[in-house]
Amino acid sequence: MIEFRDVTLAYGERVVLDRLSFKAQFHEKVAILGGSGEGKTTILRLVLGLVHPDDGKIIINGQDITDLSETQVRDVRMNFSIVFQEGALFDSMNVRENVAFSLREYTKYSEDEIEERVRSLLKRLAIEDAIELMTAELSGGMQRRVAIARSLAAGEPRMMLYDEPTTGLDPLTSENICKLIGDLSTGEPPGRPGFIIVTHKVTDAARVAERFMYIRSGRIVFDGAIDALKNTADAELRSFISELHVA
Image (cartoon, rainbow, N blue to C red; front, side):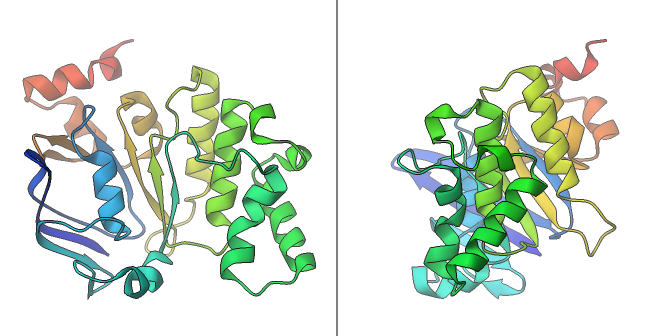
């Protein structure tokens, strides 16, 4: 389980998160919504211990990671895989090398085992034919699929973290990526792998998530299911989700 207890974080004079608290089980399908600069991506970075809060506590699977060092937090990160915004692939590597990178860095697999793992993942994500292509030769949707394959390469995480996974994609490609996100979180709780998706694209969040949190001024002002989200009385939130009410 992930637990934030009164987490506060500021960048200089700007307070990004203000005594923010929530709990999420690893099997949940969570969407974190909010405008630009509201701290959505910062939450993912805090979960991974990439940044530390100024105040409050972060508990992952019962362990307080708030002040752990880079070395100490490494085992905790194995619960997660993250797909960064825009994919963050290595431009100088082809698809095979991008997906194999973490296997070479963090496992003792032989080259034959790495090749087998890479091909298995690419086949699973329906992009095996792209194995020799460079990043610049990939469409936006294929780049996201390669990024997901790379995030899965070193293991099977308990929870996926997606940072704006459909930003910049056309509607059809966005729909396909959402389907893939759903396919990677099949099964019944508590055994299934869940996810947290950070996005400002409300319709994409609605395609995949079961729980929705809305961040405003560093705090969670809504936390609930889709029906409650659609019927919120909060005027600003209703404006933010207006596309859900378009026939």
